Image 1 (cartoon, rainbow, N blue to C red):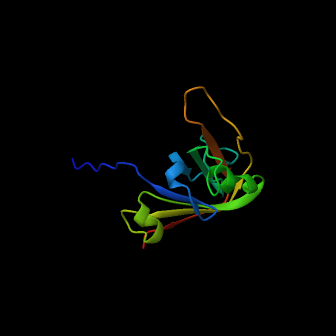
Image 2: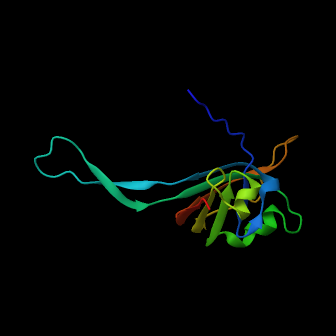
Image 3: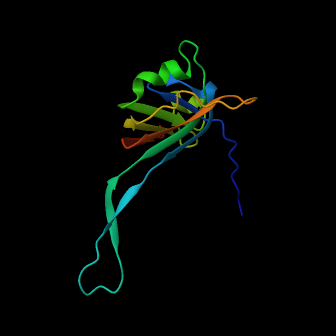
Amino acid sequence: MATSTYLSNPAMTINAVNVSDQCTSATITSVATAQNASTFGSLDTFYVSGTTNNTFECELFMSYAASETYATLAALVGTQTTITISPTAAGLATPSATAPRFQLANTYLESLPLINATLGELSSITLSFQGGTLTTAVA
């Protein structure tokens, strides 16, 4: 059986700013909300797709330097923005079947941890973006 191995090293932008050098994990998820389509007399439950509720979560090292994590994100709290991510840096500019580019437009950032500090550790924050329109480019 053929096996394909993928060593993750994605590239991503938040609000058109490349934050790949600060990112340690990223997950983009497409969710189609299940709507119950069962009828009277049905012995089983059936579902159809309702609205989509796409999400994006990432963990970033926190930096307060100009044009770094805090400066990029502070103004985005409570607003909609665009996330772009690809399994490779080349896929951001030139997507392909093996390096697709996923874009989540009009996604909402509800909160921003301002400080997440532990003695002796690099400070990192976890962000959760909700909703938006997900598109995939492969060419």
